[in-house]
Image 1 (tube, rainbow, N blue to C red):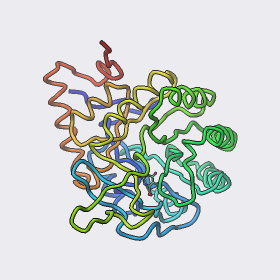
Image 2: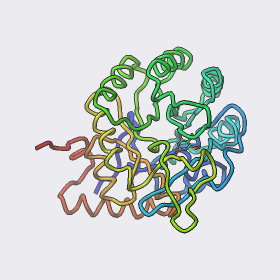
Image 3: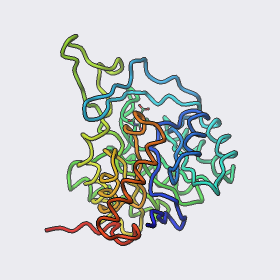
Length: 309
Ligand SMILES: C=Cc1c(C(=O)O)[nH]c(=O)[nH]c1=O
């Protein structure tokens, strides 16, 4: 059974990787991902300078997923550039996530990635829901257009964007129209967490996390239908771009659904946070079993082939 997939002309040993922000903040975690069965990996979204992030508790496991308001804690862009220099690209591709707090910060970081001649693939995070006072670029369509124009002229190579979930067909249409104007945007990662959810502790009658009065991004099983819809919506609207699926994946079936919906590569967030990088072994095995049962020998035979009624 050939679980390998092609992503932007790169052969991957498995269509699986971590979601940015999970198991990828520091070198020890990045090394564990590099050694795991994942086919690729991505660094924590970085800002120009190191950030502590929001006060704890800022992550909580829920019955069907997670709520987080980490607040973009990261070691600063240079730390991840140093990792990118040491990464073994023969082993697996590395994505480099950037979430600068301002357009200038994004341009400064991207210029340094450019100068570093690193083989890492830029994933521009336009969807962090947890930095107090910072509206998501992904929901400000004019700002989205501006940042894509600026990054496209500052960065000479193709890059990708990490989008928030959209919930309205008109928004799928409008965002796809914007993205399709930028041929350098050659991949789209859908989705980031569903922003500003709230969960409650029945005994203490309190919220579960400290930042933002308990409001935080929702991940895990709760978001699978929204993730699949965004993957499929952009897969059908952006035929010249590759889709990376993210959201709600904890079993081989979920991986299969994302691939069927149009993803070429599938990220794992909440379930990886809970179970660690060994999860990639289980997901590969479960996906292989499903493919065997269905008589598929390669992912290409079903990738993007979701049928309608
Ligand atoms: C980069 C910040 C993000 C964070 C965070 O650091 O709070 N949490 C998410 O669920 N998604 C993000 O994009």
